[in-house]
Length: 135
Length: 135
DNA sequence: ATATATGCAAAGACTTTGCTATCGA
DNA sequence: TCGATAGCAAAGTCTTTGCATATAT
Figure 1 (cartoon, rainbow over the protein chains, first blue to last red):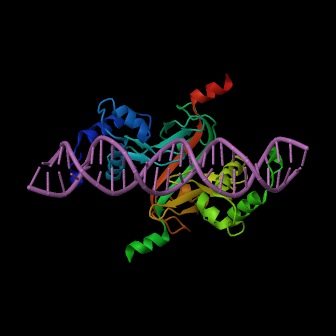
Figure 2 (tube, protein in one colour):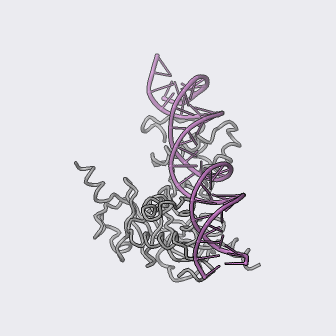
Figure 3 (cartoon, chains in turn green, brown, red, blue):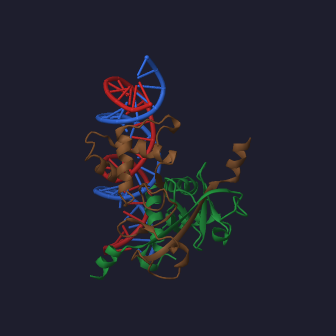
């Protein structure tokens, strides 16, 4: 799992991934830090940030970049979408299919959420940057 | 436009809205500050932040909360979706319909973007917070 | 052996806030 | 008039980074 790209399998990384996969709460770096600290009392927050970044670049975990101030992380690599609470900020998984089919209902099946808004974001490379890459 | 909710129509607010409506670049608070400063050299960045927040809560402008580190703002109140460049961070409007119909093409018509990823986010009120509101 | 990773603390980026003077309605 | 707002600067929050030491391979 780590030996691609000369990544070293340190206890910090191993436990970060284990805990993130176990959690289904899409934690922030700091939340995960609090959890991991129970097993590695001396781990530093800097290490958590550094590794979450590296691990998500490597594709071992996913970085969730959506609304809300803080960055969150997800150990679930399956493609899926999210629903976020405006009040408390928690993020849940959107049941497959719900994203499209339940657009006109106030409640999303299986989540109990009352939906206020839906957002779509495409991510890609803009014309200028594509030009830069081919040159 | 401002007299709802005892909002005062200060020159700062008027010009912020004017400039934001004129720009189509989905600027960050700081970018808009730079622009507005040409007309109001003494405006402070704090005022920009404060007003962008107030104006978006009031519905006069929109706050864009998507991926990318910084918060961005949009003077266009029509419901529409965005496409963001992974390389330079710019955000463009997604042509209506493109979001759904062109999912399998690499290039989104009319934008020139090469699409890498699509994200859907629902925003709402989670079961716990809904409970709290009715009690 | 040695390049990579850690812990720590300092620095950075972005945003919010407290305070006093000012200004719009 | 007088409560809302501006400007300013300080503080806050989240994240990144430099550096010396430790460690995985």
